[in-house]
Image (cartoon, rainbow, N blue to C red; front, side, top):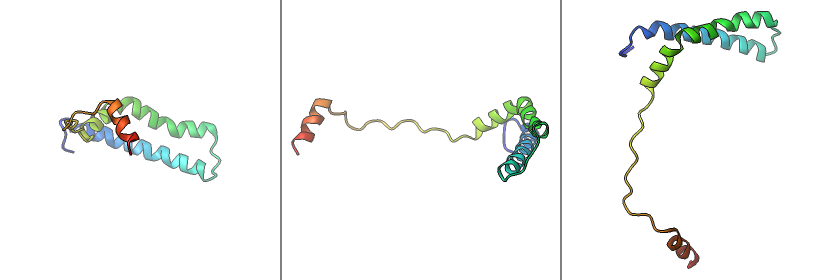
Length: 92
């Protein structure tokens, strides 16, 4: 990982693993698997706990990886007043 925070790699790995585990539970439920509530909670809690522990590292890396917005392009010509635009439209 090319980042000012190379230690975030371990946190991101833990988060990825926790999310994959939670997704497999959701997949089981969606495809008709009856998973008792106590088991669902036990299997989802690690993802929640990992997010609470390592969420800041994820957010930091997400901000670093997000595409940078380009500045707005300057307007080449001044906008016509609304009244002029309306009369131009009506004349056609």
